[in-house]
Image (tube, rainbow, N blue to C red; front, side, top):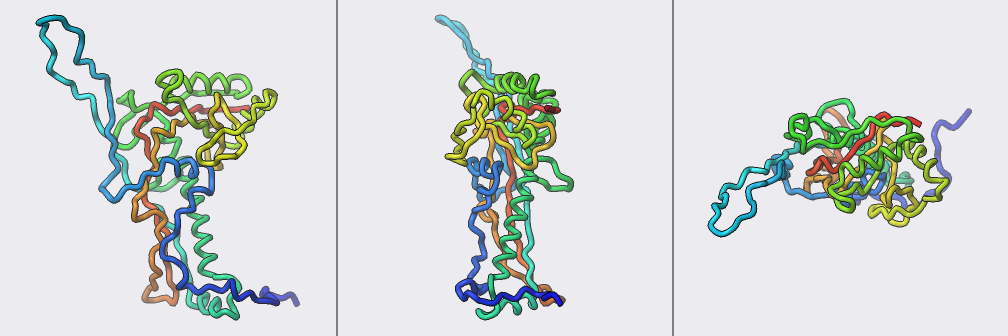
Length: 316
């Protein structure tokens, strides 16, 4: 008869750690787990509370001055060229549950091989990492989600500003096609479209999925352009580049999409008291079990939408 339980033949007392040894807060080590979160870590803005997240914007040119001579009359009226965009706070959570039976089975130096609560916390960390990566990359079903790249880099309403009626609040969105035939040309055209000049406000990251990354790689290999992209969030890694800018891929970017991002105009806003905060364990009145939560509160925002572009419908 097969042994139904795996019982080790030796014990290491150094692996036994009581539950009380675990901190009730979690150190911020989540962001380094994947490309998009590593990128956004460089634009992490800590905010201490507030009803919402607000950025002032310049919505139009000011043309109130001019040239004059002698006693010419000067215009004294300055037009209103400013507005603001407001973003909502969003919340993310992951539970950590422990029954009393599990706690007692895993207690004592003689019977505890690894800390069960530590393993459960690690699983919840991995789960919330995946949830954030997906929510930041692509629209997902359900309410109260974060602002994802597909929504941010677009022409519709974002925050409290309607891109459909306010042209300054629109990204460049280009319907592409065969990458082999027009991919590099579309990347070039879109990059110049969102830049303010040849060397100002250009995209500093091209972000896509693995399939399109491989299309791009095939165009670069004959030119032997594989080199260090000098990613500030991953120094030393070997990356592909386009015009000296890193091209990377994520696991949840939608089919046929590539983004040209100017991260200088992006912030990952995070509440100072809810940055992967672990709550105390609480036991309900009708169960011999207890539960805690890992909490995160914030949102992914941009304050200059027209400096990003999106290519859609990319094929081989």
